Length: 289
Ligand SMILES: [Ca+2]
Ligand SMILES: [Ca+2]
Ligand SMILES: [Ca+2]
Ligand SMILES: [Ca+2]
Image: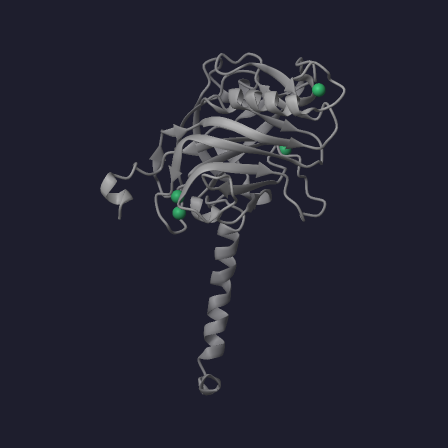
């Protein structure tokens, strides 16, 4: 009641509102980069201009976060499992640029893995996970999951070593790089504990989270189901996710899936995830604190 007599309360409320709005837009979508670009430097051995490497190696070199932090150590997938897919055939593929020297070049449809391309079996899902791992366990970014169906899917990525947040608070340095073909689709990310249970909070990455890669834009090719290149290309966009956004301080594995309750949004995400080594490994003394 005494607050009602305080003439400053209404003014305080007015001041607080814009701060809250800014905090929500920075943390709600998993993006931790202000501005419309993310600085990811790549090496494209085929071509002096990275934009010409759409069918070839696009090798991750270093990332420069908006606070000036430069990181050139990355953590790749060591396993992929628990693949789910409830969509039609010919719509869920692993693509590695056909002229690549890093990774396993080609276009792999999930339905083809067991030798019967008319349906998706349990064997298909298991073998497809191996194709995904072949695309996710090295620094060639031209290797990703391609999805063209508005259908349920999910998969779990386990990392070579746990990712660790450089700060327990929201910060500008992302522990996860997420790439998306064309930057027009939404994807859901959920941290898992050692037993595979969901921990922290699921986030949906999409919309303005996707940034144009700088200093030079990068592109990936378009392919028919038999693997032959088609005309044109798609710009490859990316975002950085601070582990605080996922509600965890460390991350050993992550569930990637179709978001639910997002209306008519494009959920056909074509994704590639790379872990970023932003923090030193704790010493024994730190572990036992
Ligand atoms: Ca099959
Ligand atoms: Ca953080
Ligand atoms: Ca897309
Ligand atoms: Ca961080």
